Image (cartoon, rainbow, N blue to C red; front, side):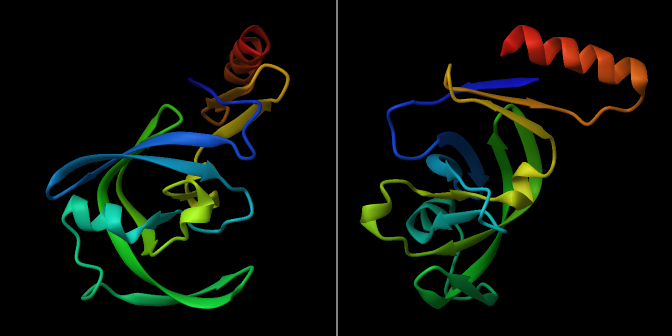
Length: 147
């Protein structure tokens, strides 16, 4: 079970994420974005991790402001919300400073676990999917005691 606190006064829910690449570890503040299909990270962070966005494969990406290109990067590891995922594919692109974050934590990551949000307390709770009825009851108890 992962428990993460977020700032109730902030305009977005920011999740602290640890990324691992060939040159080591980078910490990034990503906006939890259930409207983003993919996790997107500013290309400066991927550069510091040791990835070359110039030679990486590209994809077209539809955004609110139009269509753009993003590099497809597979980071060695991504840790967020209490879960570590190895060999995780992200999109890297330059992001505007007005975003006030290093990227977006998208559905490709969020769909790996159950996510519960308590806006009254500023808590995010992640739990594995239930395997059977007994496991579901145990998870339900964890949810209610945490939230």
